[in-house]
Amino acid sequence: MRPPPSSWLHHLLLLFLAAVPSALSKSTLESCASSTACPALLSYTLYADLKLAEVAALFAADPLAILAANAIDFAVPDPANRILPAGLPLRVPVPCACSDGIRKATSVRYVARAGDTLASVAGSVYGGLTTADWIRDSNGMPQGAALDAGTTLFVPLHCACFGGVDSGVPAMYLTYVVAEGDTVPAIARRFRTTGNDLMSVNDMAAADIAAGDIIVVPLPACASSFPAYTSDAGLSVANGTYAITANRCVQCSCGPGNLDLFCVPAPLADSTCSSMQCSNSSMMLGNFTLQMTSAGCSVTSCSYGGYVNGTILTTLTTSLKPQCPGPHQFPPLMPPPTTSFFETYLGPSPTPMPSEGGIGPQMAGMAPTSSPPVSSRSPAPADRRAGDVLALFALSLAAANLLW
Ligand SMILES: *[C@@H]1O[C@H](CO)[C@@H](O)[C@H](O)[C@H]1NC(C)=O
Ligand SMILES: *[C@@H]1O[C@H](CO)[C@@H](O)[C@H](O)[C@H]1NC(C)=O
Ligand SMILES: *[C@@H]1O[C@H](CO)[C@@H](O)[C@H](O)[C@H]1NC(C)=O
Ligand SMILES: *[C@@H]1O[C@H](CO)[C@@H](O)[C@H](O)[C@H]1NC(C)=O
Image (cartoon, rainbow, N blue to C red; front, side, top):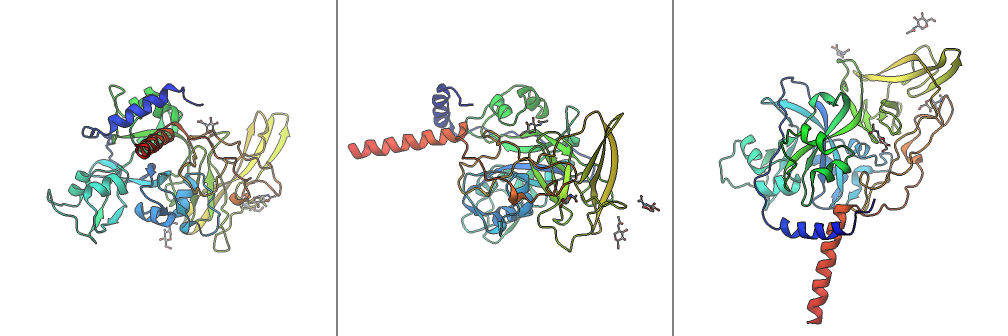
């Protein structure tokens, strides 16, 4: 998957072009009517070394939910105090609300620190997921007003749901801020979609994007069908990742083999969690039995049905499949990253972690920490390489200076 050497030159060129301030950024807005929030993801690159708890606070998100959405082991000790490196790309799950007729994340508040400006808050702290003008308008600030330290800002962020489908297939939408050097085909490849799909989702007439544009990227996802009265109704999990729900009692995952949501007791589930056993059965969430019949394979499974008032709903279902499914495979989990070279999505996928299927002691619900040690560091992806080129360039300049 190494790009041809010519792309190095291309990146270098774009790096220089990037020094020229780009035109006003574009962004997609999804109009909406329903008042219900829907699940969405934000692609966020850390602007500094930050504790996971700090990242979570920036987005009013649960630290564990952030780890789960990035397929990073969420059963490690003291996850909130882990320091994540500047430059790390993360997916942040947010409720995407409907406000003033458009979709936006509305739960985020930021307390300004000395030296902050609206531009630095929008562009740096929030990585371009919002704009200075949007923050100013949303907070009723006059044009040119200074931002005083200690001011609490409401920070609207772009997000979209489009009904949780893309081309008729369940999908979650990731808000993505176009970086220098990005092209529509490259973004499409990176997120395993097509340029046409990206353009139609973003209502783009031509494949021209500029650094700072905000687009949304559809990701294949597993949809839930919990009743509307459950507190996690509408839960959706992107392929290859996890979600934590039911007051951290249940973990749900999606993929890699199929897009059926698969929920089991979470590693942190304790005695405060309500029963996760299916009624009239000895089966727990995620357990299933297989029985070969003349008509096919009869699969009885105990699945998660949503969270209501502290109660975990379970449903026991039996279905007939032409063939018995193999052991359930969970998306692989990575340990919390310590360098921004860490790649969850852009590098080659590690092999899925196997687990025993059927009803057996090792089946579903294996604690994330029991995942095998992560494979060796993946090679630097293309846009990382651009940074490397710059570093090299700077280094050679420095060397040249020394020689002079
Ligand atoms: C889900 O992810 C896995 C591995 O990351 C991939 O092999 C599979 O094709 C993906 N499924 C869909 C529907 O995109
Ligand atoms: C559980 O079993 C009892 C007795 O066998 C039966 O009366 C009841 O309806 C069953 N409940 C469910 C939810 O199937
Ligand atoms: C949850 O509990 C409250 C108070 O106990 C009750 O009024 C409400 O109807 C319950 N909701 C559901 C969905 O059962
Ligand atoms: C059923 O699921 C539970 C929870 O995931 C797991 O601990 C158990 O090993 C599974 N198998 C059986 C036979 O209960």
